[in-house]
Length: 204
Image (tube, rainbow, N blue to C red; front, side, top):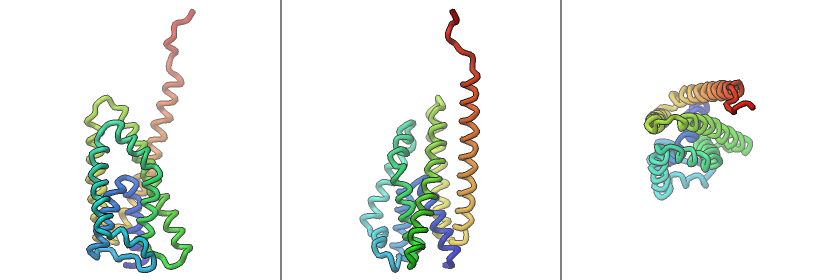
């Protein structure tokens, strides 16, 4: 793979880790174990991702996350707990894929991978908090199932086609920024509406 393809793969996996960390760890570990993605030559501590035990634990975590993400408000609690875990996992995934020999690039991979995961995690958690305000519980499960399908499909495509991984990373980044902008506008409208709402308290 070329440098651009490796960076694109690392970026797409890190961005997707902000949505489904355990699924990404499971997929990358399985890809390394089967030879789909090269094991890191200079960072042997990250060979652990290809360990069958780690793959199994990540698979268990992916199943737990699948069900927890379908329950209203439990998904928000799950997101809150993983506010630090997902960026750290995304940073390690990026480092495992890029595998730079230069320590400066190692730090850059950690920072960019963690930042990408934190960005998509923030968009996911904020969007889910808005969805949870809906009185119907079905919308939460629909959104979560959509995230499962999109994450799984994009993750498979990114690992199987490095060129597509570059496009996926750009699209996810653009969609995440757009979602954050829309959420900001929505919150601003809600705050303005509450601010200008008539006072319901009776006047003396």
